[in-house]
Amino acid sequence: MTPRASYLFEAILLALAVSGCVYSFTGSSVPSHLKTIAIPLVDDQSGFGEPGLREKFTTGLIDLFNRDNSLQVADKSTADAILSGAIVTITDAPAVVTQGETVSKRRITMTVRFAFQDMKLRKKVWEKNLSNWGDYESGGGLSQRQTGVEEAMRKISEDLLLETVSGW
Picture 1 (cartoon, rainbow, N blue to C red):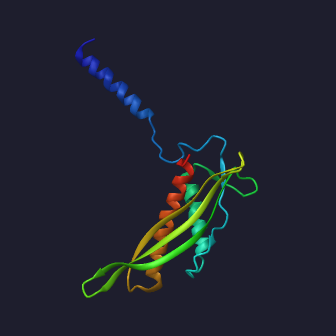
Picture 2: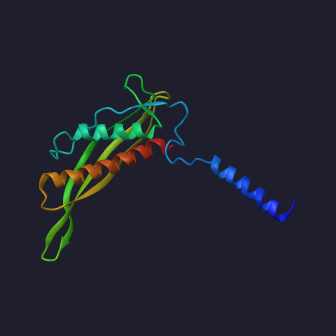
């Protein structure tokens, strides 16, 4: 085989090898016996007073699992696994203070406690506290604060998905 033919052959093998490799970060380690997951309404123990927080968090988490497609969301009575939890604390504190001690950004920090149970094997896989944050512009009122809350919820939901599908 000529050097040129050898290089061509190696390039074809490399192309075939690379095209056959599909990398997926999520879903790669979910045990094969788990196909469905139930996500009951998240409890709000924070006392933060955000209207509809439980429903927004739960809906966002379910939507994220549906988009990920690692586990199909199902009813609690038929699911192979259950992800349940509560919002434990939410704090709203200054994040950026500018000259003259003016607060220009605030930070919402949310902490949740969740448990993941394998109903097929009848065991708790993990129980953890997770925390994340979302910043918002100060002085924008409740609509700006809502931006910080939504960002914190989104980040924690992504953390929960990652922990659930790859935390084995």
